[in-house]
Image (cartoon, rainbow, N blue to C red):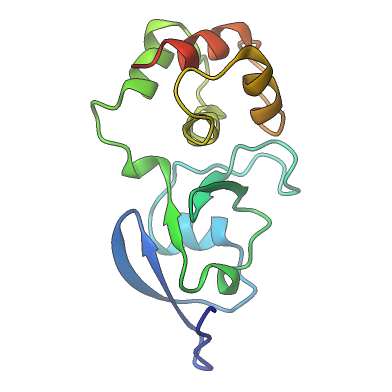
Length: 150
């Protein structure tokens, strides 16, 4: 059960580090990550949870950070794209397979892809990425990149 501090502090594990953040309980997780923590990988695309550009992992599940009040992640583990090591195979595969053009949606797609397991089927990719919109590449290169990551 999350622990709520009446003073507004939220404790969570952020990219593997225990942190305590001061923010109004209803502040959006997206805003706290970007403005307070300086983690700008999650992007605001629509602000309505439709595009997936702000996707982060909360306790291993892909969620739209624009919809999550910071109070909801008290006691949780939050992972952003910044947690991936430089040599992680998924971003490299996006480069190799031309899975990104402008790159705005890419962090959210990569984090969502991490929840799909290794070499997901095409049906699993289509269903799993249904909440992540890309306006540049179309999805074939994205699917190729995810399936080719080792």
